[in-house]
Image (cartoon, rainbow, N blue to C red; front, side):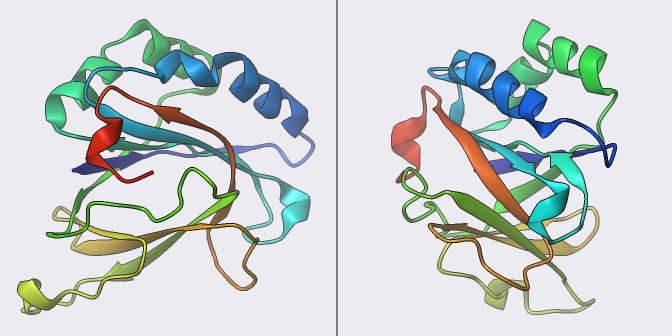
Length: 175
């Protein structure tokens, strides 16, 4: 599975109600999308704490690269780029055996915890979480993704889940 994530930092005075409305109006458009397992429409509000920034930061779970490529070439992605700019896209490969996010369907928050993979590490023994763990081979970086009911304190990257789209490959990930 491939995890894809990008984030847009918005102005401090940005009305985040616009993002919430955008999610309400457009979230279901990716339901049933070919090759997509799920997309969590994530956002963070400046007053929530954490990075102290307004952000729109969707995360996608793809069965394989063909669905990801189809999305990036779609009119929907072109509209996103037109409205918010050209994103820096992060992508990770799920670690072996990491095939589910417990309770993603019931979660209200999602956290991303990034960590460095040290040179000469035992790559068969990378740390995992109860959620989903993945690695970026370009930057030798790992990420742990956890879905939660309650907002955690002290996490550097915490997002609210505005909507969970279920793609055509939703059965590939326990939601």
